[in-house]
Image 1: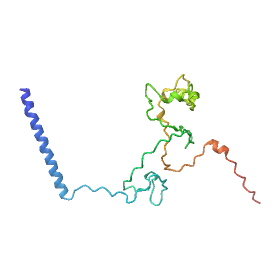
Image 2: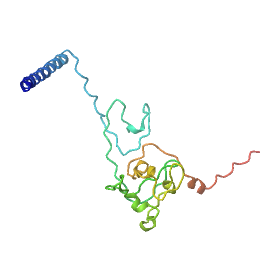
Image 3: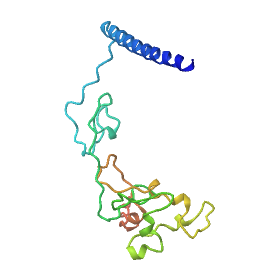
Image 4: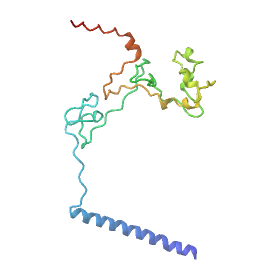
Length: 194
């Protein structure tokens, strides 16, 4: 008896689904004929902006990240930035910025069981691999007690450190680190007023 009810219910449910589908299609077409059609998407920008250009906001433009494309239009996405593999240390863009990674890290395993970064950057191995060792702060717990190995809260390197890419700078930055300020010659004293 139970199987018989199931055999009747399945075809009825399928039939009801098909009827509702066609009813939705007919109602949708009726609304479209009455002028309730959805708006067509806005036209794309006539002349796409060079995505590698640094954009300085001009009249009516507020957001430099949009690269000159008006807010009501869709711009073309920039190409993916390529990882620089030059092993050259970049200067920092703001105080206390974590250093960027100057080499490719594709395929590096950083998970609960293994941290490929620490093969070269652990304090014990850094001299062997000619890599900068991680800061001593990475070996401290939250109570500032030193640990024998890397702290669990500093274990996942990519939470703070990112690879260097050839992406264009979107916002100008005038930051100067302490070393460059100390190395700059002092400004000449102002002329005395008589």
